[in-house]
Length: 372
Image (cartoon, rainbow, N blue to C red; front, side, top):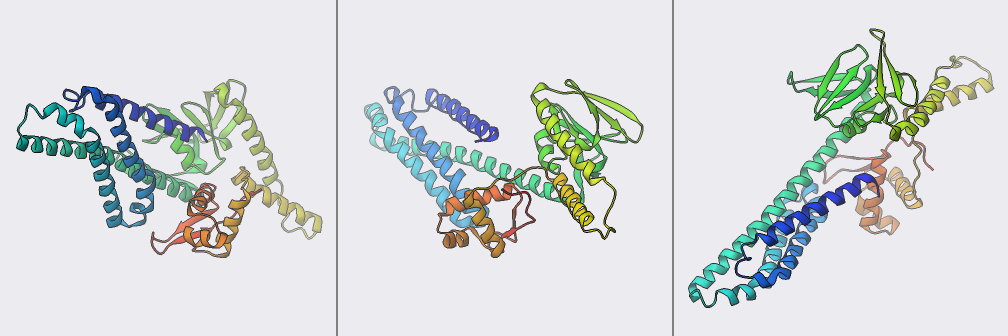
């Protein structure tokens, strides 16, 4: 489990702990049902089950696949079931407190009001997590598409908030990226800087793999622009105006810098050796092929290690382009959940991609990298 998933679990846990404390100690049932606090905690568990059944299952399985009517049918059903369960759990306590103070017809109105408040509370929690899920998925989709675009065009498209327009930046012109609060600045080799509302983690996802490296909390540098470095400082050269930029290196990132930059330099030296393409010597041809292989490695230094299950799924997609998860699970005799897990990892490593719309599209294999 990576750090991102751990942080997500921590954030969600803190949210529910705070929400539970607020609602149970400031509840509309508190003045009349003080002795039923444990039931309020239990009723809050119904809300959690309702929210995550939609967040983890119904939204990905139905809403994001275009089955809108079916999704809302299940969503509304889960909200009503959770609300009804909460209401039936605390109804005896409420009735015991109000039976002597209200008339029979007033008791029914009071119960309807309580049920309405419970449904409204559950609906608010549902809508909050529904919007959070949609925003999160759209952000990831945007970054993924931008990443693929940058791989193909060797450039990135960003917006300039102060000018309210789009701007195309070639990756080879970027020297480093810095962040100040919520604004990220792309510093170009000609000395200019372009601002954008990106986080540094998003920048690292946006740029092609193994072309950049974070050196501290507020700076990401391009490996191709590094002139020299030591244990505490890195020097970048702005080629257009022959200026030098010094940036501090955090001890946390020093080891990664040494490893990545040394490996990058070794491969770059091989790629920049003299061209032997016109040589007829068989040995020279092998050397040319080796240099070409090294060039492809330079574009993606990461070695991908796949499990046997993932390899089998990748092979099936390669032999059956356009297939869906259900098609794969039927042929390889695994559950949809298992196949989806490995498909997600294959997409993460950019070994497969989804083409077409949600109903008629399918998975296709892309150019494979270093796989073990």
